[in-house]
Length: 269
Ligand SMILES: C[S@@+](CC[C@H](N)C(=O)[O-])C[C@H]1O[C@@H](n2cnc3c(N)ncnc32)[C@H](O)[C@@H]1O
Image 1: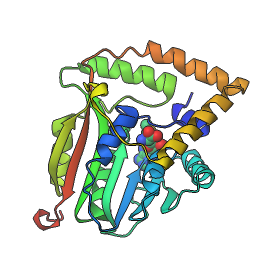
Image 2 (image 1 turned 45 degrees about the vertical axis):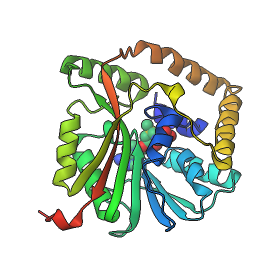
Image 3 (image 1 turned 90 degrees about the horizontal axis):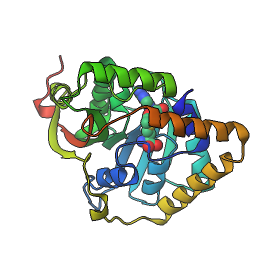
Image 4 (image 1 turned 30 degrees about the vertical axis):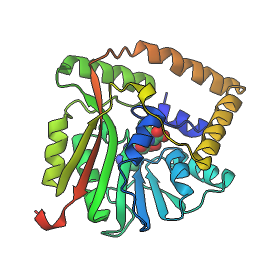
């Protein structure tokens, strides 16, 4: 079963660390200025973050995803909610379909962790290329705790692949290896926030009209699909197998990492 295809068809959202709260914590890292901003989201999923940002006339949002079904759903959400200042592109090539130094901000959530080390490096290279100097690359991702044995990593990834057709996280990735790659590619790490053990009730955030409409739209889609026997059986299947992938506390950890493009200190290899 392909979990990503299922969430694309049913319009699911917030499939990343700390869900809605994670996205709000990430968006809080974008500096508030009166200047207009161009934002790229890598792995835009079904377009919910686009909806949160779309109400702002000072923001122009571009979303890319390597799954065509996701882009179809983004365009459906855009039409249904009358979103403006946003555009979605299907992309499967190594290089992003944008010119150099175009974006002020590049974001992603639960995208880097599921890449191979080579794909991770490629995305970091491309994020660096399309960002303006001093532009920010901000991401919300889950990786393995250093203490998680390679056996456990392998076992969980194998089960996840067979049930969901997607891994939990690249087995070789660590915070240190990610930091090294970012620095070697010209980024300066500005901030690393641990978000795996949050006391959720401590956080309050404002939900704008577009986010609310987008949440309602996804809820409506979810309930509508439950009346479809095929979708209902998939829904139950994923609910059941989710319990089988036993992820105990202390196996995975999640971070929001903010880094800045620093062209001056970077010499192209
Ligand atoms: C786990 S989902 C999270 C999506 C989004 N953050 C959300 O919560 O709805 C990961 C998304 O990244 C996309 N993706 C994975 N690898 C990608 C890549 N190399 N380039 C672009 N998109 C990618 C997937 O198709 C999927 O939509």
